[in-house]
Image (cartoon, rainbow, N blue to C red):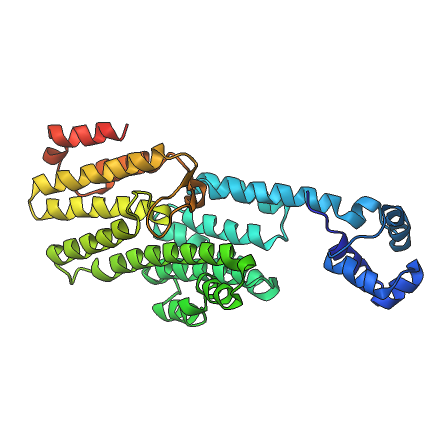
Length: 368
């Protein structure tokens, strides 16, 4: 359990307009001791806690932040429970309960906003109906939250939501509104992922070596994910032919398999699965049913491999050897097969005749 003594001491001191020297004089200690307490570098003798609590007219539990520690555990549980669900409506219900209990926690508000947007039915009325609430939460985060990562996360959510509204007639949101938000976002080279690789490299000592290697691996993973998603966003416009799209997707799969030669794709598992699914669709569009079935089967096999992975696994590819992969970082576990089955049976524009083939039914059976 975390102890919040230093933070609370500083808060109570400032509420009384006292300096560290004032508190030190009252308690009969050096102001350097008070400074270290507030920074969390040391703690007072346990016998002093009742004296300090009495002076500030609070309980020892309040001084230590016991309730805050318990609340933090609850908040982390809410974030974990909602973050592990791919059912956005169920996650939204969890986050609605969370912000009712902790309305001032910006981490919860940010995730609530994301699930509020993601859980809407795909109709213009549903998307427009939440505009006021989304905007209120966003304005609150931008005006009052001091954590940059949360502020940027909220901007990302609003940009994506506005992109949906911009396509709806009379929504009041245009492409210019989306561009305005994006213009204020940092470049990739200014991101946490890349900066960590630079800073830990420049420190150049054994203490940070492990952190440097981990940061580099994480950033390579992130870059692979971004590259994969960006190629999809680039080439899946109507302007490009199915043949062009096929070559682009195969190129990305070649890159993924080159970096992940052990078959553990880390953060890119779902993208690889979807890539095989896209190829199956594209070959079906071209009338090549044999190739379509080949790649749909690969999509199913990739989904099955993901679901059969333990929650935590160790990667053994050339660049990622020894790195741990946690499936929970991607959301719910054991859902890849059900997701791919839904796509193949409900979403992919495959003909009824194709779906009735023996080979296709075998692929569906593979997904469970």
